[in-house]
Image 1 (tube, rainbow, N blue to C red):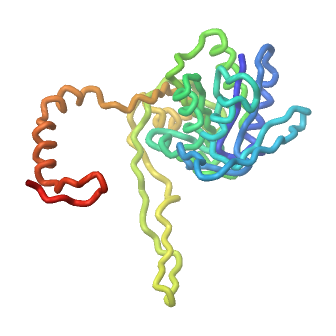
Image 2 (image 1 turned 180 degrees about the horizontal axis):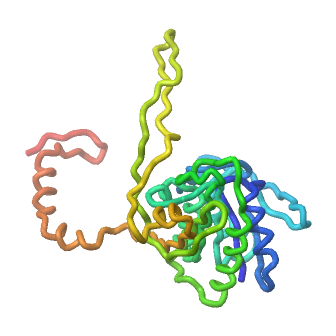
Length: 284
């Protein structure tokens, strides 16, 4: 099976290299690395559209090579899809992220975004994140990480997926607690309670500009049994299946009962028509 490893912490990140070494030891696994050349945390699903991207071969300590790019995690997956490392991958493994990616936070995560790009392209994916030794319950970069259990478990999970493939439209969001886990749990995404505030940190009297910090304050969460947030709080590994269908299907029938045609007719009746040149004409 052809596997692409990527991340949002950069190609030299300890978590990525712990994962690379573990997956590289699995027989019959064709492992490739394309990752950002530096940290791209919290870039979510951003892509680079306005300029070409640099790509550089990076040698690893075991003699293998990876590719670093000045793009985003999503760009890295696109590179693999477009043939940078040969045939398209059959599995995307993104991580191991330096910090958890739980609940609503996954919508900001570059780690999870790379995995999401896989399922957009019809490639199953796994996103892996590790809580720091300080046991923060968010994605902030902690100072100390032990990736040994997360990397070893990721290898076992990839071996299983090689034999029992995931659906092409599903990713697994895996989070590991700091230290020794008390078990493992299949979970749903939990609910964040953000504690952000607007904190003035600098000002320039000459220009009238003010500088504020509005992020970086540790959030709390709803302690909902069965959620990924509650699992990590209980020092359990969390495995959450995620898909990309954002449609609120229960609302479809309700919205079909709204008089959208009438709203459109009312709106159009108030609009001054334009001629083909784009200039307003006189309604007759």
